[in-house]
Every structure is written in structure tokens, then in C-alpha cells.
Image 1 (cartoon, rainbow, N blue to C red):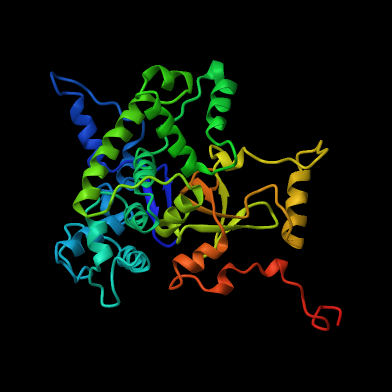
Image 2 (cartoon, one colour; image 1 turned 180 degrees about the vertical axis):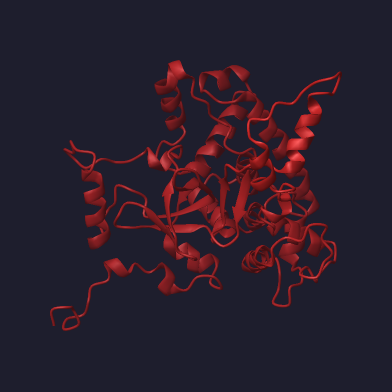
Length: 370
């Protein structure tokens, strides 16, 4: 069952017992077209004691930012007392309001701003909507809607046949040349497909799901129409730094910094997270010269953090989402410069948040040995 934790902002797929209502509904399938019997793989005692009466409604276990933005756009302001059929947790509502305020979609009294009204026109997660609205400022809306459409279809873009895993991995890494990050890699995938006149053969050669790409193209076509609706000019700009700034404008709450352990730590609401193994940034790593042992990169990173010199791993990143599987993973990760956070969101980050305390030298006479 998909579950969202508003405190950590993390999605997880939890294994949970079905409810009694779900069990009874499934039993009804056995006699759908004729007499039948239902054999349950658990005891009557388990059914009566362990199973909940009903499944937890999705509104109580999902991110409510988009729901809140939609309700605000409809003129419903008092959300805490709104008559929901299944009231969501108040903490989830408050976190959604906090996020929308940080994205400048709401003002101090909780009313929609001009930015918020434009964001509400897009049927997307508010962070993706803000990224598209911000692309107007950075004059790269054409690239940003391509990235937004690719992010919207989830993680079903690449596939790895068991007998051709090495070929599939190499094909995927070709899009990550230059350590550009996952967002730019997705843009490269879409543009390359477009250049081949949306060729199905090209998808097969690069181990890319054709159906997913067609869905991304359909979403992008819809977003093009919505750009006209919110009066954003469709402009192309292939400057990767500008594109990354536009992405950061929407996803600045999702930033993380490299730690000495080799893991990352989120800047706001600190928690330890890792780059997902499917990310290009977890695979495109520069190895130390003459490195024969896998742990040497980690030791080298620790020394780099200590002395503020070049790293083998990306130091600051933004991510699309957090997922909990075997570890807390960041999906769709891109490198950023820490000063962008203060430049783009001065209301959310202060200079002390992005300064690296580990690289600061202690003044003389103030060390432990003094």
C-alpha cells in the first residue's frame, strides 16, 4: 500500500494486511458468473482480530499539496474545517500549506497569489507547476515542459532485459555524459527521440519504453496549450545552468548536502538519504587516479569535504522525490550550486544554511586543544 509521511516528505510502499471490506469484495469474485467457493489463506481468528474493517482512504495517506492548491483556487479557504468525507490528518494539511507558502503560491493570510493562480492551471504536483511558472523568468519554458512531462510518467522510461543488462546500462549512461544530472538526461532522451521523428526503432535501440515516451509526448502537448493559457511564452534555451536554476525554483525544498559518510543529508528537516542506484549521478563517478579498491573513493570524498577541494561525488543536489525501499532514496537527482538556494529562495534559506561548517577553519586559540 502506498503511504506518504508528511513529516519527512517521503513516500513508501508498505506491506499491510488487507481490510475486511476488501476481503469480502474479493470473495464476491468467486461467484461472479456461477456458484463458487472462496478459500482464504488465513484463519478466521486472523480475519477477526488482525484485519481492519475498511482500507485507509487514499486522501489520508497521500501528499495533499495539489489538493490544497485546487481547493484554494475554487475559493475554499478554511481547509481545517472543510467537510471532507474522510478528513485527512491536520498535520498533512498544514505541511501542504507550508509548502505552498514557500513556493509563493499563497500569501501570509493563506490567499492565492498571482503565481499560485498560474500554478493552479497545471494539473501537476505544485513543485512541477512552480518550475514551469519560473521558466518564464529564465526563458527556457520549452525545455522545462519536456522535463516536467518526463518526470510525470514516473520511473518507467528505461528497461533492462536480463540478457542485455550491460548494453542497457551503457545506453542509459550515454544520456548522462558530462555528469549533467537526471533532469537534463531526461531532456536529452526526449530531444533525441524528437530528432528521430519519434522513432519506435530508436527506443528499442536505446532500451527505452515506447509507450512511456508516447505518454510523455501527450502530456507535453497538453502543457504547451496550458502555457498559452497562463501567458507564458514558449522559449528554447539550451544553457544547462539556466535550466537547473528553473528546476531549483520549483524544487528548492528538496535539497541535500554530501556528508563525510558518503551519504547525503537534507538541508531542511534534516534526515540521511542516498542517491537511488538508478540515478546517473550514482554511476557516473570519477575514480581516484590509481584507485584499485572500492573504498578509496569514499576516503577521498571525506578528505575533499574536510579540506574543501574537488570531490568524486556531487556535493549539493536537488531531488524530485524521496522513496523508502531498503533505504531512504532520492529519485531524479541533479547537482546545484548552494548559492542558488539563497538567490532563488531567500525566504526559505539563509546564508548559514548553505555554508559548509566542515570547511571553515577554526580561529586560532579557539580549537579543542587551546
